[in-house]
Length: 165
Image (cartoon, rainbow, N blue to C red):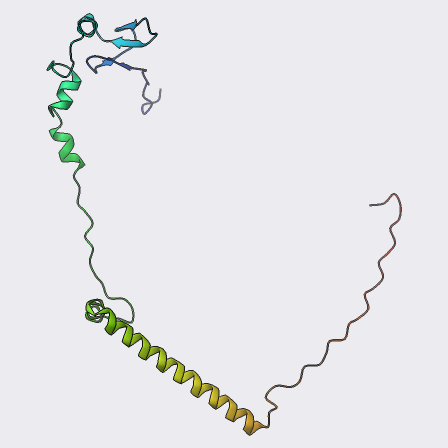
């Protein structure tokens, strides 16, 4: 047979004690308002009927959960190492440059940005001026005038023959 396959058993949980109820065990109690309760034993059922508080009985799961019993190993397992963030240099900027920029005041940053933009604009203006001078030197024939396209007549379609697709 197959080794890895496990049998799945449908289990209920006891409404009073919180224990698992396996098939063929326990009892079902249906109240007059049609609510159903599952109990693992007559002890649980009797305690339920007597309106006992399962939180105060130290053998129930509710009590154990409330008073943190038997959960020490689970807590240790759940703890794990957090990923620590580290700053690294990016291509084109070393770590100290990045740190220096981060510690800058916003006004200083804005001023630097304005200066950079101004410099780029100056460069663009110089380029435009150079282009104009080039045009003047060559006599304004930098590009040949475009010729209008001549439309060619489309070939006539063959007429449809009835009965053929």
